[in-house]
Amino acid sequence: MLSLLSQLQQAVQQQQWDNATQCLQQLRAQHRQQFAQTSNTVLKEITDLALQVFDHSDFQARWEIAKLFPDLGTTAIAPLLEILQNEEADSEERWFIARLLSQFQTDKVLDTLVAVLETSQDEELNAILIETLGSFEAKAIPALTALVQQPRFSVLATTALAQMRHPETITFLQDQTRNQDEIARTAAIEALGSFNDIAIVPLLRQATQDLAAPVRKEAAIALGLWGAKAPELNLTADLRPLLYDFNAEVCQQAAIALGRIASNEAAELVFQALVSPATPIPLQREFARSLLWMETPQSLEYLLQALDSVPLPTRIEITKLLGRIKTPALQSQAAQGLLTFFQQQPQIEDHLAQALAQAWGYLGDRAAIPVLEQLTRSPSKTVQLHAIAALKRFNPVD
Image (cartoon, rainbow, N blue to C red; front, side, top):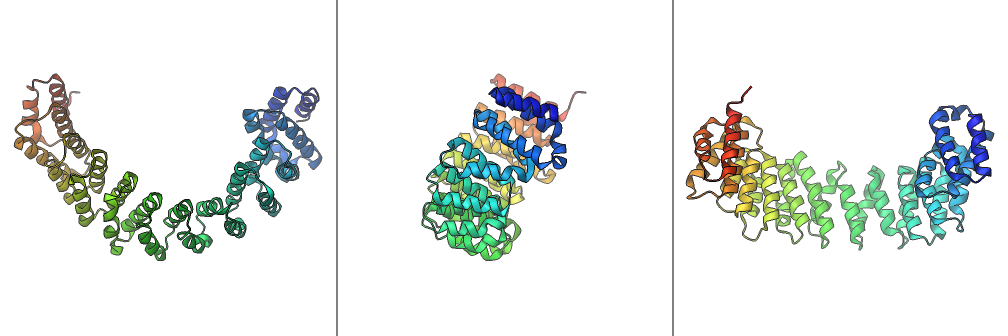
């Protein structure tokens, strides 16, 4: 270590910053395990030299050098805090240090982070400081809840508290569901949805009617999780309006949520939205996937029924989805349903015929063999190839 330290000192004296960075990287790679037994005097020397290099380095070099400071232990704290508090210091350097201090979770660091926030006018630095405070978990809850009362920090502090997922934040987050800022409400609902506390469910239900789409989206996600583990809550009625929401992401998450619930009632709601003439094709595909995820006899029957009501692109998507069914009993139901659909059509478009052949091949029901043989004589070469490939799955060649 002493040899490398000597090289580092020389590189710094000669302002050879690239060489100095390499020395620091080597120190960390070769001697980090020895730092715990190294004297404070030597550690302080390494820290001071590292900070000089840090001050004269570009972004990438700083990224590498920053990895060294946590290994140096508490010796690094005081000089790092000194730079953070220096309003004349380089902004990027202060940002790096603000993030780095999450590795030193002491009361002194926490108090300094809050003190810098009180005076800093650098919005980017403030965001990083609050994010770092959030990493302190329960220790930072009093400080962050106090910052919420200050308008310029309110949303950032709320977001930091929401990301903690700590039980002590529940009451605070419940209050934030009434915040005028939709970002704060969204963060609160998203966080509340992760707690296993049934008292939160009424707030989630109420949030499905929020004017902000991101809030409704997070409410849908959370209700889907609750509906899957507590079917007695009967959350399908709360999710139904979201299937017809003005925001497509809300509709998608409502379908996913109902897919998690996977009841016959949930399947019926998704089916109704799927076949609605007002539903755009991208959302029809999402609704079809939701029915597939349920993988129940009822959801499968709805997918087969939808084939008669949806436009061609959605028919093709549903056919492909039916080929992915894994439950053996349902595979036969799907294959037979597709056969019935095929036989009722006066004409099958080539892309749909390809999807049908592929689905029958995956489903493995031998009742489809005669139709596949018929498709091998299709005027379309591509349809022929798909049918031949499907037939090979019934009689694989070793």
